[in-house]
Amino acid sequence: MNPTDTKDTTDTTAPTEAAEATDTTAGPTTAEPTADGHDGEATGTEETPRASSGLGSAAAGVVAAGLGVVALSGSWVGRVAAERQTLIGQIKTSQGGTPAQQISAVYGDAWHTTALVNGVFALLALIVGATVLALPQKAGWVRACAVAGVVLGALGMIVSAGMYFDFFLALPSTGS
Image (cartoon, rainbow, N blue to C red; front, side):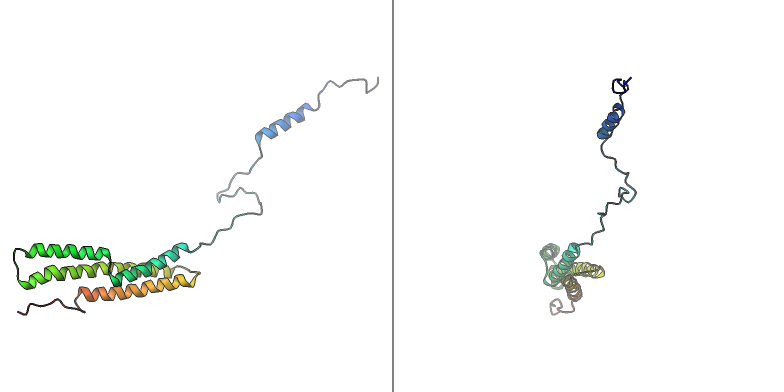
């Protein structure tokens, strides 16, 4: 018998076709991610931690300088609080009171309220500026803004304390 004449009835291609079919339907195999989030395979393109851009520190430095300026020049919030205190003083002294009580209630309390609000802005400028200075910086201008915020905040604290304790200008007296 001639080997070419006989037909082999066993199909040798069937198992390989079946294996290929299961491989294509299963999709590519991936490694399980590890605890650090990597898939465990070395791809050569592993991510390195990015350095911070410093945008938050830069913004905080500018905010510190702005708060320092507001502490020295006053704010709308301080003006509203002072006007409210003036109105309260007018209501309290409308029924009577000595001139000294009227001056203290109408003008002195409003003056001290303005000093307190400006002092809060100065304290915020000091805190934000000092925090920015404590962080590592790359840009020199960020450090300069933070130093400006600290210096203006310190000046604002001095001026506010002087206003509150009447070091700079005392309340007018009635003469008696």
